[in-house]
Each structure stands twice: as structure tokens, then as C-alpha cells.
Length: 181
Image (cartoon, rainbow, N blue to C red):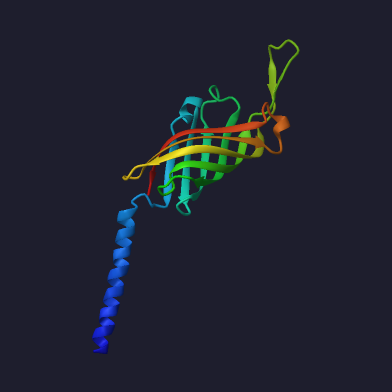
């Protein structure tokens, strides 16, 4: 009798754990932890930007994005950046809806352009490496199949070598498409 009762308890526990896992997956197909994205705006400025995001829970995530400029004629200031970020989501679905973002950035920017007295020629300083901190806002839409659509805008301030460049502010704009897995 004890063996039968113990066997029934073990089977019941196994069945309830299995049912909970199935219910969790069926109730929330959006609850996947990883995401990769490609910025669709960056080719218009002569660059490629890709990102990875890891969801910590329903409302927060950590991520990193990188931008590399391939056409200096379209983007004369920035060479590349690597930007880790933290996001807090305000939507009802898992890691989607409106979000606020705080980011850091390591960047390479072209140095100041110094014009001659006749304004016809200029010399350019070497590339400037700097760090920046900033914040931004955005919106993310996720489909049941795992497709991700995202729009965001973020602004930050150069911290150390802003006086060696032509600007002191960095901006990140995105209209991205990706996949959640």
C-alpha cells in the first residue's frame, strides 16, 4: 500500500510539473530570453548596426549594439561604436511595449577639422576615442512567431575628449527588425 501511494505521489508530482511547463509555454509564447536585431536606418548613413539583447525578466533586459561605418562620405564624424544598454519595459507583454533605456558607449570619432585662413583647405586631427553616457526611449512590438520590430531614439554626452571633436553629443536612432529566440 505504501509503495502504491508513493508511486501515485511521484506520478502526480511529475504530471503537475509537466502541466505547469506546458501552461507556461502555451500562456506566453513571447517569453523567450534572447534577441538579435539589425538596424534598417543605418545603411542610409553608410553604416551597419547590429545588436543582441538578453531579457532578465518581464520588464528588464541587458543588451549590446555595435555600429561600423563603411562609407566615410555619408558619415564623416563617426567611425564605430560599441554600446551596452539596460532597458526597462512598461508594456503588459513580456519585454515589449514602451521602454526607457540607459546606455554607455565606447566610440571612435574623427578629430576636429581645422580650417585655414582662406577657408579652402583644412587639416583633420587623428581619430578620437571616447566614452559616453546617455538615455533614450522606444517601442518594441513582438509577434507570436518571434519577429521583433523596434523604434528608438537615444542621446548621450561625450565624457572625456569632447573638446577634440566637432561635437559633444552622440545620438542613436533605430528602426530595427529582429528575431527573438
